[in-house]
Length: 279
Image (cartoon, rainbow, N blue to C red; front, side, top):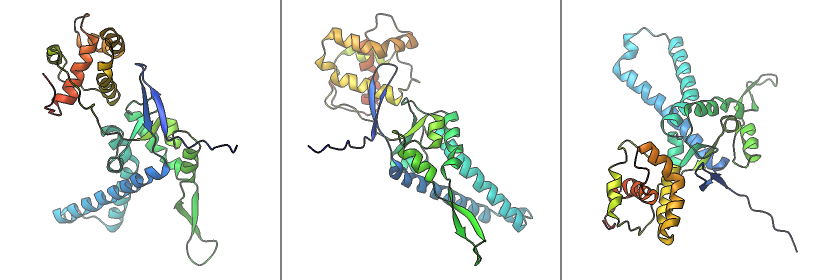
């Protein structure tokens, strides 16, 4: 019998500290290419708009800029945008740039958590390693006149193809990966008819916001809780709820099951204004 080839797996399994397993869809090099090109476009559109604003506001007339100073200023601005565009946006927009947001991608840590400023800095500053080797571009008629100005990105491509998470050099150094961003979801036809759930919502700090992994854990639990006996519900919910009870300074005998239901109710039902939930 002819052996079947194992299909390429574009998913990665992550187990959270709460012992919950999630599966993320990894973005490969060709899925990431449109985001990369869009980010280049956004940067130059920003420069163009900035130049137009300065021209019409009369800034150029206020200061006696020479042509060389204008060119040097433009080079510095391009340099700053090239190096800090991704750092700032991925830190501020939770792992996304404008290009990644348009194409539905996000950078996360390899453990599934949001990236921090240090990781964003490392992965963006190491882009210089990904663009090598440079391809020669002939300048002039003589064969000896060659300018190495065309990046091939072969290092990035080879590195991504050799790692199971499609990580380039910057991702490996920063401990990050690029995933296909999932839209927030909520289970359908969920009935939460216990009056204590709404009461527990009032005890949750108004400033508390669930992380994406916690929100998905809570949603999965609430979706499946109807098939569990009450004792099993409390046991399963305690993995996630006990640290939150201590954090919210609730009574130790607070129902773990109902606390997760109240988080779900507040974050998915109240905020989404779903009307078909029994109160």
